[in-house]
Image 1 (cartoon, rainbow, N blue to C red):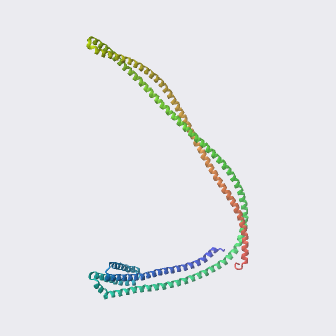
Image 2: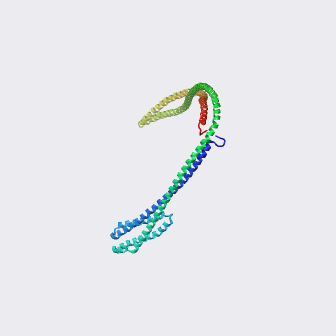
Length: 491
């Protein structure tokens, strides 16, 4: 290629001209197709107008026929059909007006047709009213009036004019469509032939210019390929040495990865042992705290027993005082019974019964005195036992208090052990995390080294391919030179 234009620019310029010509042909074809589509739409509208006006006329004839049937028979179903036909006639006329909204001539005809249709429908309604009021004969006389015939003729004339205008419009649209198709075919044929001729000319021009550029470039390609061959050979040797070195590094990193994994596993085992130790220390601490709680509860119970025993001693003293009073009452009662016995003996026969009662009272006083002595003995025994129990419980309370202090020291010791084991567990976790991070880093290094090793091998292979490609490029430059020199068209 020369310094002014490239081969791509020449090819692009030639094909741009051909493409511009094809674009022109396409635009013309598109506009023709758009025109055909518009003509087709208007042709459909014209056909719709013909169909709608014929349907309106048919509905009006149906209304007349139903009116005639009603006049002759008087049946209500004929009157219902007449009403439906009248409604359909008006709707059909409205539809025709919508279809010819863009056609002024047809609108004028419809403007003249609508009053005629309404007048004819009014005549039909009038005949129906005559049939209902005056009978069949009067209705039949009204049917044959000249006004109805005139309206029918005018309506038919306007309908025929509308149909004729629509048909003429259809013929004109068909003629325009044929002319558009002919022009489009002519444009496509001419544009295609011109584009083909232009493409052939561009191809010939590009071929001649390419031959000149190829001949001028072969010498440069040959020299460059020779230098590339020498550089590729040197690069292949260096790539092979680099691949060997990266293979050795990859082996070393694999061994380092295995070692770091062993360290990580050992750290994980140490962490598990520390966690188990922490759990055991926590359990022991809990057991000791529970034991201390139990001892505190025992101490409170012992204190409570001492309090109750002291209270029992006070109550036994109170009971002793009450027994003293009971004993004095018994002595007084005994004295009173003796006096009563003396008085009864002095009373003679009349005091015998009273003497018996006094004797019983004396015996009761003796028993009360004996019972109070026994109770006093029991109270003294209870008091002595309570005193002994108080002394024993005080000794037990002192022993429990001493045990509580010792358990407090044991709890403090377990707390220190638990804290130190927790610190050991945290340290082992940090060691495990560091080992895991080191393993991850070594794995990443291993992957990177493996990638570099693969890249080195690929570089070595690429260098070999480059060497082969440079050799093939030398052969190709020679073949191109022979081809250019032997081809008369390119030379």
